[in-house]
Length: 120
Image (cartoon, rainbow, N blue to C red; front, side, top):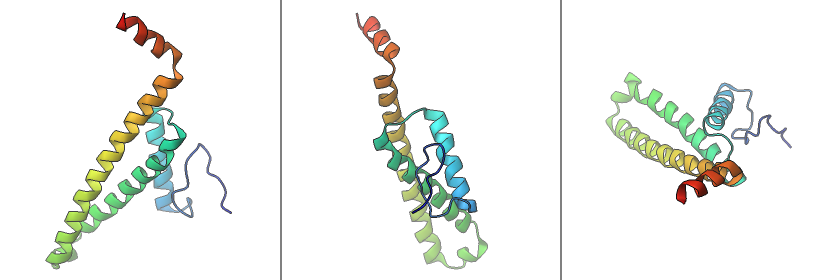
């Protein structure tokens, strides 16, 4: 059984002491700081968002290698994968922002009071 990470970070990798594990943890913590609290149901989305960003970084680094340009089929395949990863990243980011906004509205009674006041 693996040990739980501090700060409500879902485990995205087997070992978070590795370079990619630390990068994942930092991405998740930065997003949590940016958007505030999330509902529990959004935690897996946050994990997938961070993993896609790390995969995207690896793919872009691979695209920049000169040896890949000598293999045009692999280059085109990787370019297509990068496009899909970017789209997935943007969709997950949009969904996370939406869920964080709903969660903050539901937990902030002053926001509900203000919304009622402006509606009348």
